[in-house]
Length: 116
Image (tube, rainbow, N blue to C red; front, top):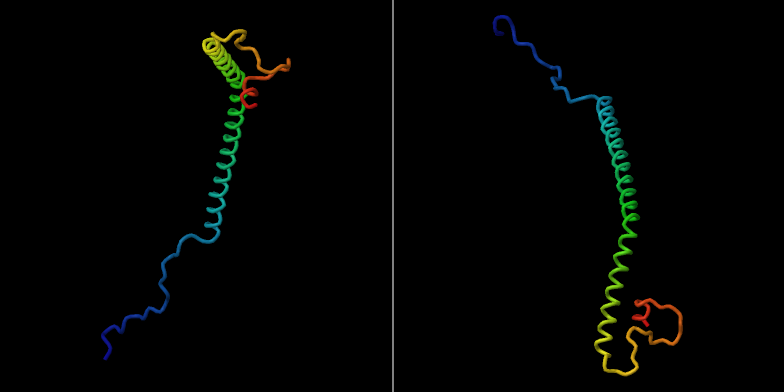
């Protein structure tokens, strides 16, 4: 026989927990995160462009200093080479130290002479 008060009710409904946010909430979250990411990307691009511009201008302003330093170094090297030539060729009669070995008046830089 059944117990007094009857049998317990049979649970036939599905008792599933909530499975997280809905589709609209997920879409809104992804959109917000993507918008923030694109904003940061744009800010980074602006900063990189400014850094590149700064680098170009700094190089532009340094070029005259580097050229002058190279000219001073070339002058010191020429003077040292002339002194060495005078020392080496001091016993040779009719030798003019520093005179071009080419018989024309066209200007040639030291680097062009070394290549020829």
